[in-house]
Length: 96
Image (cartoon, rainbow, N blue to C red; front, side, top):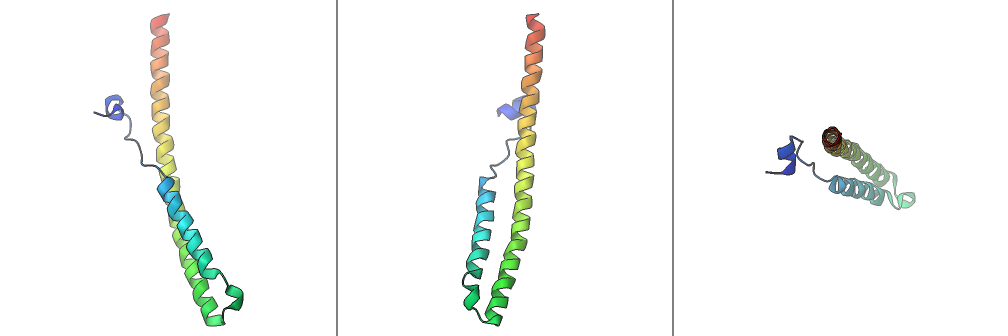
């Protein structure tokens, strides 16, 4: 039994760092596609721009996943904080 199960707290959420890594990769891919834009002919520039826009659309979705993951981590931490406060209050009552 995990400590979360023992205390009725939500299971520990996954780390959000891998999600941040994915967002960074997406940004770098879009950036790489647009490098050298000054030398591109119009059709190539349009393709590069379309690809970058598509990547930035992906980035929006990735950032929303990070937001959700961070909310889950924050909620999990709040549950532990609430438990700690409750135990502290119980201990204070017993000590009085």
